[in-house]
Image (cartoon, rainbow, N blue to C red):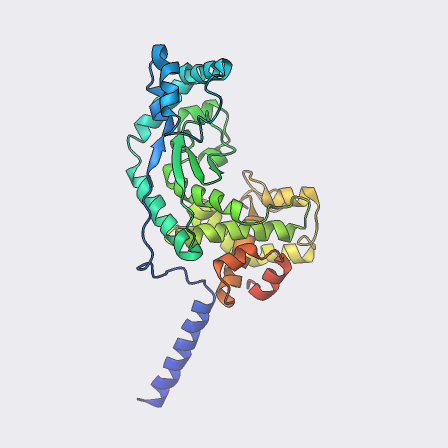
Length: 332
């Protein structure tokens, strides 16, 4: 082979290796990991279909199918009356009608969730099995997904689409309602699932700790759904995402120059961690939750540059160690 060609080939391979070392390898061989069976039991669909005159009689028979919902005292007449009132409420029935129209069946979501859970079992080799349920939450936007013990509960009324009239009438801000879409459902499930696998976030701790905490959650979702776009993962529009990449080095310099990373100032944390239309400390074009973005970038570099399992990442509580070993230093 020509020496000049050999030289340039070596250089090219070196550059490629460096690039590969900069990104975590999330395309894994799942051939030895079974796809779990995922069946989402539709609590709301069943309950809203009950006739008013036979409601009380039907409840005990449904207890076995929906134990996570119907686990109270079946002789508590007041509790049963409140339950009946909930499902006969016209507003809740209207929400349920919207849900049934949007999701006549959940087969696509079950298939997506099964693939995500296949990744989960690959990484964690856990014998733990889950039960899956859907319900109508009454627009509980603060908790669209709930994980209770081994039960994963999905509020279908929070995935009806950004322009759903009920969201506008409820006063949901657009920066939140734009992500109340069916494509966000399974990523949201995995985002909530990982919360029970890592130490609880300490809101009084340094900003870097909160950044790494959220970075871990995002990286976990990406590992469970490797095909997910950065936009959907981070809940950023394409223009917001581009702003983050274009200004990553400047943003990091801001963090370093102002010594924000090791401050536990509540106001600073709110500016970089809370959801909002934009980050006021920078500009109206800067998206919110920039601390999450940086945390995700740091964790990604850490996992790419160190031989660390996903399980070990979640257990690691030393945020400064993750930062140091990530060798994170975005270039201008």
